[in-house]
Amino acid sequence: MPILTPPLQVAPPLQQQSKPLLILQIADSAFPIGGFAHSNGLEAAMKWGHVTNPYDLKRFAQDSLMQIARGSLPFVRDAHRGQAFEELDALCNAFLNSHIANQASRRQGRTLLNTAATVFELPDLASLLDLVQDRKLACHLAPVFGHFTHCLDLQEQESLQLFLFMTLRSLVSSAVRLSLVGPLRGQTIQHELSNYVEELVTNFSAGKMASVFQTAPLIDLMQATHDRAYSRLFQS
Figure 1 (tube, rainbow, N blue to C red):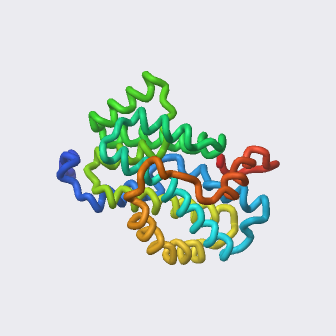
Figure 2 (figure 1 turned 120 degrees about the horizontal axis):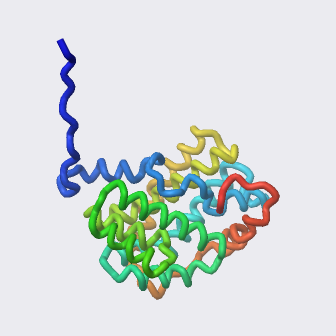
């Protein structure tokens, strides 16, 4: 007798899908948004001898998360609330004056938008992709992420926490690939900083766009030298 296979299941409308499963899919390192190629300045900090051990890594991660909370979360939040993408993208482009950080944000933003538009097939994402291409926008990561998670109907708090968590996850992953820590020690640091992520979202999610600033200038300075390193594993 022939083997009967069940019919291919068509994915339910996005509104009917489990929000926790959507969050897990986005947070999964297999979801291609380009973060795997970036160390958020960690590689440059190691080249300069600023980060040499797990204790330095934890401090560096805390400083980086604080900087993201004060300098990027407002863009994610306002994009999630529906503010004009083109305006936010231009502000983000002016704010990221380090050429390395600016390039990294644009590369990841474009990758995220292309991936999201392909995977989820939402009209709003397709429209944003057309706008970016037609007007040749910078397409920075933070406003793209806010717009993307709004389209997925994620709550604002979920979106902000997810953005910071993915920053922390990428830092830990970079540290492991740079042989700074092993996988177990890396996961321990990520666990130890999970409450810190929630605290940052709680404390700084209401800040005005006019108050965005960089809190770790030393990280900015070191990251700006990344393209001068003799050998590099990451793009930033």
